[in-house]
Length: 223
Figure (tube, rainbow, N blue to C red):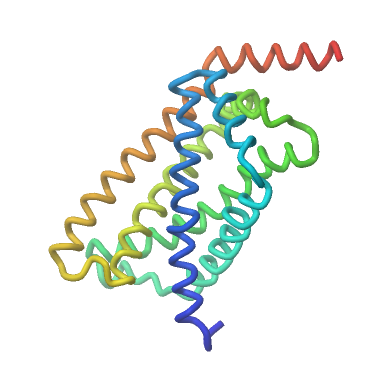
């Protein structure tokens, strides 16, 4: 990778924005429908996504392959990084260190989340329309609930701080003033996106999703 590190880092950086940055916003909005519209609202959002043309290829080339490259190469970058916060304790250096740490946490969390949800759909254990019920079971487990909070905060920080770094490294925000304004903007994005994800996570714990899960279980038993 060393001979091609500049190109690899640029691809890694770009994939963090397009398509993965767009995906995290879409995922936030889909999950937020659980808070805004309840069990039926979330189910409608899932059905809308599944009705997209060529959805398998959209997910393969727009999510899974970019996610795999970004995650694996990100682990390599984190391994190569020198986290010298003890020596240079200024804000951006801490942000650099937290970007690497949050990236590792996000990598583990995302693939665990995919195993608990999408993989279960893939092997036929859960239907797409029952993902809300599955999230109810996950979020009402205290251990998983805490892990999901940590994972969501790590992922949204990694996204927001990564966007700040992307704008700098691609020469879009040039100079201290532009970078300072960008910092405030992306701190705001971090707070909003994390809050919406956490509201969604809290919504999945609600009685409405629990009742839907019980109804789905009864229907399965009847069949």
